[in-house]
Amino acid sequence: MATLSDWSDTELAERHALLTDAYAEIGRRNLQLDLTRGKPAADQLDLSNALDGILDSYILQDGTDVRNYGGILGIPEARALGGRLLDIEPAAVLAGGNSSLNLMYHFVNYRLESGPAGAPGWRTTASDPVRFICPVPGYDRHFTVCDHFDIGMVNVGFTADGPDMDAVEALVQADPSIKGMWCIPKYSNPTGHTYSDATVERFARLPKIAGPGFTIFWDNAYAVHTLTGQAAPLANLLKLARAAGTADNVVMFASTSKITFAGAGVAFLAASEANLNGFEDYLTASVIGFDKVNQLRHAKFLPDDAAIASLMQQHRALIAPKFELVEAKLQAALGDKGIATWTQPDGGYFVSLDVRPGLASEIVKLAADVGVKLTPAGATFPGGHDPNDENIRIAPTFPPLEDLSAALDVLVVCVELATATHQMGSRS
Ligand SMILES: Cc1ncc(COP(=O)(O)O)c(C=O)c1O
Image (cartoon, rainbow, N blue to C red):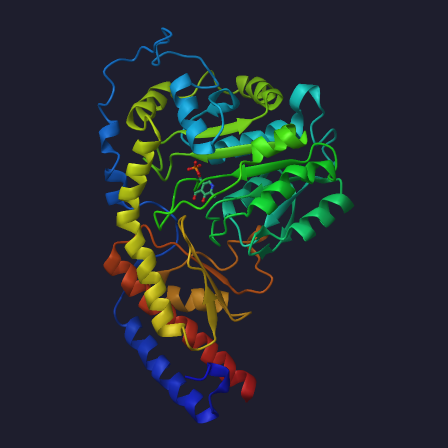
């Protein structure tokens, strides 16, 4: 079939009338569906219910009673788990509370105020400008952290290999007030990119051409979240940075939020020794120690790589069909019309849908008006502003398959209706 742009005026008007009827019919169904947040579904959470009651002792081999205060860096068993997720030795890892986003927030604050081995913070006066590079589309809560600290954000796009490194290198060279960059190096939220080896190597060298204190925030939230069973290889930034002499400019994060319990997992940070010491000092004012009981539960539940792989295989069995459904529905309804493109991720939690420029907010509104909530258009960009108004993030994991199917049927009608309306308007 020819793409929508090639249709005659009559064909377009006929199709528009059909879509208008279909949309009106959907409106009468009183739907209440939600495709907004990338949360695990209840059946995924159930996979880890054995965490409860797993402990037969609260005392570690070294005599530590995990029920008591202390130990900001976390218990050795949990640091080893973080080391497995981040592919680094446990001594470089802090095992924290239930949220890696919380660790990111605090690491930004630590670097604003101070630095590794007595290095100055990014801001010595309140008016010092600080900027971060943000690959877009990206994770909205990264941008919220920047907003919170009044950190400016500079968008860069993607190539097939990850962020557009030519643009990134030019930016950090030109502007020493760029102090950080968000990266989701594996199965990126929402685009699904996994950074190539060449890209990671360029990241390891990047601090050498950037202003002082430039720090790469390597948020490996989806380190083990393959949808195909074939893990995408990712080079290890901290190890490469050590070799390049830039280890103090790198901090890596992971968590078990989408492995065990999203709200009650364990978060990890890996950094150079100097940063780990500096960050521990910084944290001391706010916490005496994280939840070591939960750390021990996780260490027992996930004692080795095989246990992690087996649990992730069970997640995959539950969520891969949801991603397959997204692909099948989008392909069937939009595949031959030339009006949208979307990702087919090998892992992670999202599908990134690009519609014709200028139409994303309208499509999200059309869907909301008939009871289907989508992530707000623009949410994947700093300031909630997608300059092309074209990106829509689809989060298929949480709703049951039937709800997902119904929501996707609505989404594709809204995409086509908005595009046809716009096309007719532009011809008249
Ligand atoms: C890229 C990314 N980082 C971090 C998080 C949140 O992680 P946590 O639950 O460990 O705070 C998410 C959750 O969606 C995410 O997509």
